[in-house]
Length: 423
Ligand SMILES: [Zn+2]
Image (cartoon, rainbow, N blue to C red; front, side):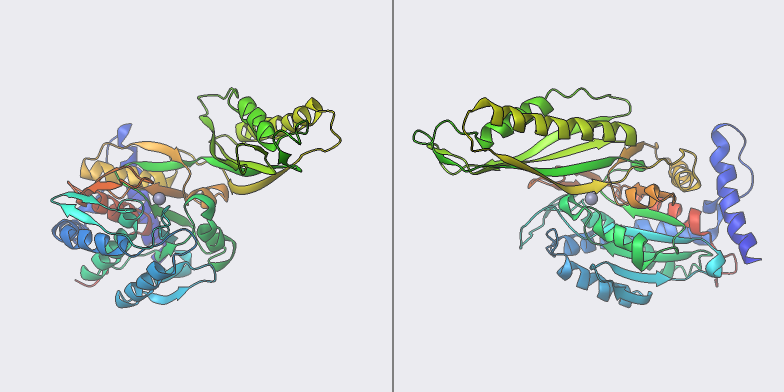
């Protein structure tokens, strides 16, 4: 019976998702009264959601220092009545809202990331009408807040889902965090338990259903160094670095599958009249295609090696420089069908709300489940964000409730509503 209910919820959704080619049959999610009321509740309480978003954004969460914000979420999850609220060993905060379908029903993780890209220990948010400014207000202050709004709405409307919901405020999405929070969830904390994954990350109304893989390295050339005049004639780490970047800058990559490269940081040297001891750079390479990423990875390693040899070969000095390439990031790619049920759940939600669907590929927490073959999407949280990852980050709250409502419908599209939920 329970399995049947889950299946019904999913099949109804699947059927209406096929509308683009056929006729819609059967009731859709928004024909369920509680779901409709839930949508109204979300819209009516959007101002509260925004106030919460500002509060959360003002709790600093620099990379690898998410603990304060995490603690806030641990308390919130407890207040919301989530079960088994805990912080795992890497700092993810987890709370559960079991469904009525038991372990045979889908188990979905709803996640948003705690970390920001900023080192600031104090974050001040300012607001003028719908325009709100502050570091991380959209990315991912918005997604984090919606975790709370979703659970609050389910509770308020006394909606029993058939599938099990696991809510996670996770660490380590950004930059060198390298998805460590989500990695840990799937490798250990929730290993083997999760059937679906939705991350709410960023602003707008897009849906990320493809996983852009990336490799990141820090490359360091090292040498004896010396006086620019007195020690002249020895290989120079900065010159070797220049050679490497020059080669990288000439890489040819396909636009489809989209493949990109960027040297994002360089460092080295001590003074204008010294041959440097060290010089280093950081590179980020991305592609939705694993094969293209591997190809570029090989070209990159070759470019560095050749540059080293050229610089060492340039001088007759017996003193040589060396190079170290350390991988500082690796985000896996994976294939997910465009008509996967989890994608259709989001498309169906868009349709119900009159949102024009935009599908895209990205590098998000969903990369981990997608690479493991677990259906996953990352959805935007609504509103209009500008300047994410910059000190001028702002977020326009106009019609932001649409993002909250879309998340709500997408979640229920996977979990299903138990028709026996109390009135
Ligand atoms: Zn983000």
